[in-house]
Amino acid sequence: MFFIFFICSGTTNGYNTIHHIYGLLFLILSSLHDMVLFLFLRNPPFYPMTDINDKLKTAWLRQLNEEWKTANFLYFTNSMRPPNFELAYSGTTLGRWKGGCRRCLSISVALINRHAWEYVQEVLYHEMAHQYVEEVLGIYEELPHGETFRRVCQEKGIDSTATGNIQAWVENRSNRFAVNSGNQQMLDKVHKLLALAQSPNEHEAQTAMAKAHELLLRHNLTILDTQAKRNYIHKQVGKVGRRDPAKSTISAILCKYFFVEAIWTFGYDQHRNQSGRVLEIYGTPENVEMAEYVYHYLQNVTELLWREYKKKNTISRNRHRRTFIYGILEGFYHKLEGRESENISKKLVWKGDPRLKEFYYQRNPRRIRTFSRYSRTCQDTYNSGVSQGKKLIIHKGVREGGSKKIKYLN
Image (cartoon, rainbow, N blue to C red):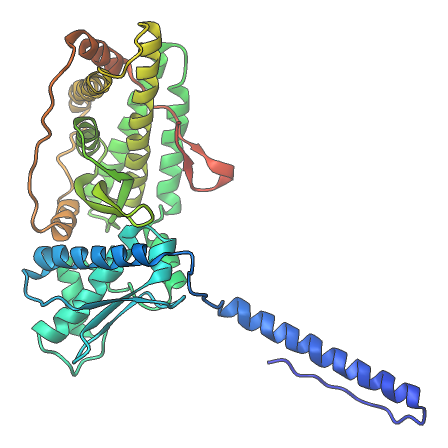
């Protein structure tokens, strides 16, 4: 609150009296302005998003229903009945489960419109856990986020904190998913080595990249040996779309050589109303950050190499594009595979992280293994791609403006 102390001295002059009145009004208006500004900044108002048409909102409700059915199958063994879905026009509240006769599950329009769909999924699963506790377990006497609710979230890998204020939860989630200072120093060393990998001398470049990967390997082995507590996260990377053999090969490279687990899960682009597949990566924050960088790097550099190959061989069409890119990734995969013998000779053997697998299986209790069919359209093009892949070197990621965000190769 703002307090105004005003002392008016007695006057005999009408002019002075009016002067004091104007002064008093000015102080009152100034204080009211400060108070309104303070309240505005503390609790910014939310205006209904009139630019979102009804057709898109209907699509969002339909997608929420589909997400609910998938999660009911994956996490709750189809034990629940579909609720009524509602879009909430709240600028602060993430979502809400209203039980009893209403049976309504609401998700904030602001959350859907301003944040990635995986955030919406997290909030939906959180509200479904409330529904499960009430309708399946029949527990009413506990607090909403009581012991049973927290146990259900723990067992099923659901974020029990996905509640309350939107901005507060998003910031809290970002902090939990961020790389800590110690691990950030390790990543900075890796990126410095990758900077050396840009050397025109091929031997020096290959050596720098090998040292960068060895540093990552030693870091993960050390943490695994000390049984230190690890913070595991999950993140969807890339655009929602079709899964193809090239993307599948990239995910295989990440899982085998970059200390993460990955799965092609259902994704949704809420602004384009497009459903498809998206790669979801699991691991520690530093490993997920590195894997995400490698994913984008490989996607972009293969396109650049294809354009160079087209120009060099005066190719006008993209008929053999997928064959060439697939060849690059196959060559790069076998290149990393060949380095394993060097690491074994140094007694650096990675057998996986059991706790990461436990976290991954918890989040994906019903996994289905699928395979992408692929046929080469031209053996010579494929062989050229493999040759390029065996020489491929991952270069340094550039951080934008001193921030923690990495700028990817375009």
